[in-house]
Length: 68
Image (cartoon, rainbow, N blue to C red):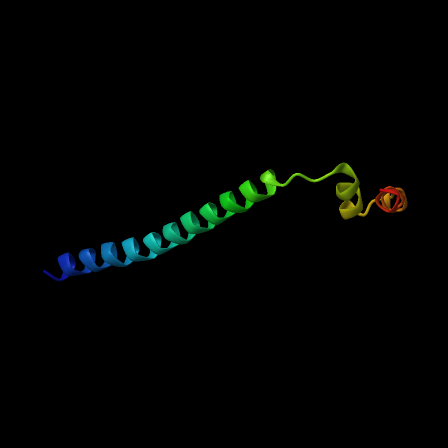
């Protein structure tokens, strides 16, 4: 009888732990998909993209932004 109780408790604890991990992973994946969808929906102009990347084109991007 003790072995049966031990086996049932181990199964219950494992299901609870892995269930919580699975729910957290699923929530994080859903949030990530939503964020990627929002980013993909952005319509950035090439000038603003160059300004945000802060590469060697900063001066050129600033010139283009100021010039209109």
